[in-house]
Image (cartoon, rainbow, N blue to C red; front, side, top):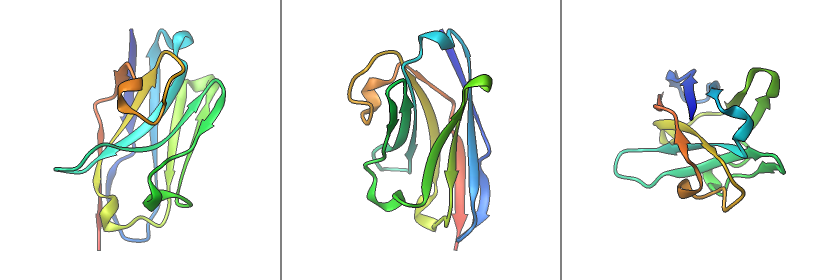
Length: 124
């Protein structure tokens, strides 16, 4: 089993930055990749990027390209999502996820474990 705990969400103003953290515990040695997703009410889950044993899997969400960056601290089993120049349309619940095998890492179905999510609200 793998447990994921996200932190760092909150209410910010447009143009601000936030850094989300996702700490993994449990059978972390078996994790192939960790990714970030977000979901706004009534919308599908957007893939924001992942870090796998093979390297970084870039986001396919056009609206965050150039603004969001994923990184990790292996010693802490923690993955980060740095979000800059936030916009009201970035408002969503942000999730981290862990996948155990190499597959299409942009798909939510590739991930076996999910965090509880952290709310990010961007006011205009």
